[in-house]
Length: 436
Image (tube, rainbow, N blue to C red; front, side, top):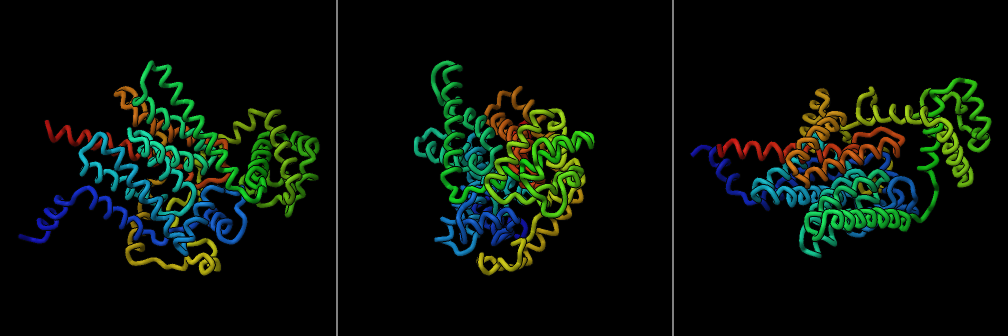
């Protein structure tokens, strides 16, 4: 017998557990000890060397702090997010597919390039995706312990971003409604109440995790929205609004005036010094006033932001294939995160970057795919997939109005649910064609 048939026989004999273990091992080794963006670096700094602030995700910073008692570096967090995503996908696929095929589909999901480039980066968006998928899977189980674990994971996932607070609603509805008794209205009401409760608890957890309240995120969003909204006004209107809201008095510029950044709102946060809580609160109030007076201009500004999020506007900020272990080399030793790419990682990076030229990492592709699949799943009454797809779409809508920068990983939940649903539909079609 030649080598290839032996390998084929060995592979066919592998049980689901072996397939999942091999997929997890490959995913971790291909990104070990994990890549860090500047956002992740901020969260790590809060967790290890300072007070946890409201910058980015306080809940994720707390996780980094807790895991640091077990692992000196952040590699344990990388393993957690990979395993959660893998097992969550396996549990969901297992409800409609044989165990071995479910394991293969879960492995395909995690190792699919559009998903892998996101899950290989340690950060709140990767943990959000892993927590939501695993939480959805566990909440839909009939065992009370599993359901409690699922609720906890959904709370943790929802605490990562404001947009996730609405993304959990269809997940809770999809997980609970089929198992509740009574009329549709009663079941829907109970599930909706549970979804609202999970979102409220997530908000509470986020606040409890904060040790140092700064309002930096809110102030940055205020500057971004002010600059973006004023972009569609005349020079006289811009001058009038700046004077009326006392913006340049409240937030004295570090390098240039607000007028000069109106044409590039994405740089607004870099050029404005907002040093105190009082200044930041005043800036947020000024934003609210300007948005209330110029709602059309604000919507136009946010639609421009949406095009950037979806990759429909030329920008280097998406950075889908991110391969830097840390943005700032001097932080490698304090983080216990000094590393260089292995031959395996170099080969994986080469293949991933090749796909970048084919626009595989354009979030708009997955938006269209998710919308198309949602229509198909509604017609088929495949409600578990409908809930997943609706969650991904709601999260993306939330990102349009709550983020100030453009990053591929922000859209990772949309990408994951679209790929998950596509794999599920494809597997069923292939299985039915073989039977016929």
